[in-house]
Image (cartoon, rainbow, N blue to C red; front, side, top):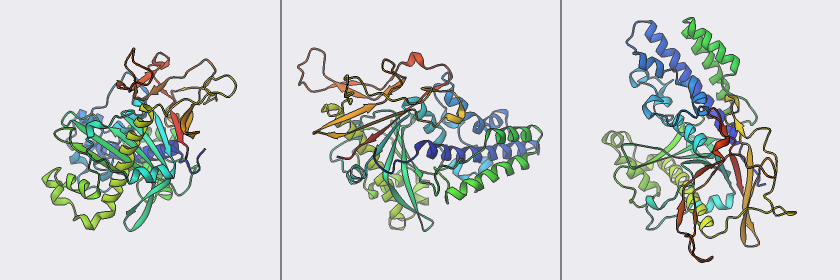
Amino acid sequence: MAPNVPNVSERLAHAFAEWQTMYLIYEAHVASLRAQGHTVTDREYAASQRGRQLAEVILNNRVQTLAEHDWYPIGRFIDDSPTFKPLGHSFHNFARELFMWNRCSRRVYHLPHALEVLLASATFPDMQWCDVQWPFESFIVTLEKPLQGIHKDKTVEYDTLVVTRLPDEAFPFCMSVRLLERPRQDGVRLGLTPSDMSRFEQLMKSGRYPQAQRLCDARRMETAKCYPFIQGQVSFTIVLRHTTAEKILLEAENIYAMNQAGSRRAAQEMKPFEDMRSWWELQSVSLRIAVGWMLYLETLQKTNRLQQRPNSRNGATRIISGGAKSIITEPEHLFDIVGLGSFGQKSGAATQGIHHEGATFKRPHWRSLHWRRPWGSEPDAEKTVRIPPKLVREDLVPLYGIIGGTKTVVLSE
């Protein structure tokens, strides 16, 4: 295994804890306004309770999509409030991103530093966004050496990228890359415990809204000991407003210009490029890694360099137990990852190992987008038939539960 592999389950759990505790404080705030006689519709009141519901919704396969406007706070309830500002801005798409990763892949790729450097400096001459073939609609990339950003004159290290192609009815393409920070200390459980949630619900039922807020505030203070800044609040978005045939231009200056052109208000609020150069450069590097990895993975698949690692004794797929269960049904295990695999250079050809629970059993998993030769073609024919991502053994996934997921470590050459 490569060194310095981030604990993705922990990173996701901590970001979820930040989002959820803020949302619960927001719920108590809206309930308090309603109790004081302010106008709060039934729909607005129900929407304020989303913080309690996300984990259950992700596990409930009867829910196919999340409506964008149902999963962030009502503007008039949070305007000018520093407590809720991240919910309406930096965490705007967080719930949908988490939902899509769990439903569309639960796949993590860990990149060695050498490959990270290669992708971070990549350019895409004459390539268009429509040329990028997504292995999954959502996936995660972790880095052996974290990216560094400057926030309030302090250096922050980000080692996890959540990459999502968000459905958007208004525009043909919307891509999000959310950065998760490396904590000051590993192995710490953050957020509300099940007993905390029970206590919160009791306080809400009895109308003790300030006490409910203080309970969540106490948990947020514990989170602040691990993260100087809000975990998960850094997110970059590429929105194509007219066509996906636009060229892929990811220089820092190009991203700045694209954001300026997004809306008049954005252009008015944006600081000059040089004042925030490090911010735009962080966006540039993050997006290059995300896009470059998709193109790199497609190249491996098209050139037959991505193959399963055979068992040394009988040629079967290498076996290892990923855990007692391959289906997750408990909210507290929402971010656990069951499977482990790797691929890398060996004798000039790439190999891949996928770990399963038994010699004849294939657990449910998402197979990535790939290419095959046309039926009846020669063995050396070009792979031109596009096979979309598919959930393998979907019949084993219950109505309530998600697949265990897989982390794949890319080995250094």
